[in-house]
Length: 208
Image (tube, rainbow, N blue to C red; front, top):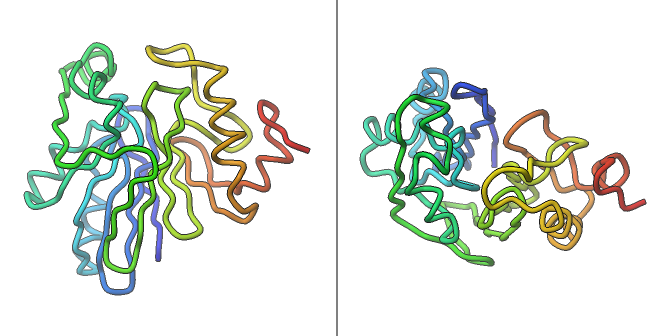
């Protein structure tokens, strides 16, 4: 499995292109259109099958329509508990960020512990409320796409609609920190990290 990072959208969210040796691919959190991401897909002959969302905030969904225009058969996957955010341009801040309301109607809704297979890759969805009420992290092999739940030596905001400081700390401690220390963490913003590094260095949720 290979992971490539493309900053997209007005506040440069980390959008991930993930693919296996058989050219099966999925995209995580497209914040905006990305010519370089599309060029990578085309140059490598990849088959993007899914757009997968960690949560419903506007900075993570702004590029969905652009990718659907190019890849009309791609399926959009989103957490079921994010329906409210994904259907309201004010709540998801898309009006504020893009000057237009972005509404997402996923093809596939997922819940905690649901699995999706994409070629040789298996995605496992882990509910991690706190940044939003229904946000998820996505585990794939030894990688975790943490959205805006866990950042490198930081955590996601909890002052937005549906956020909870108590819940985000609980999600990190009881869900993310139970994964192996060498699990690579790919967050929605900032640089990559590992579970073990965050246990030692994260000032908000330090374990030892």
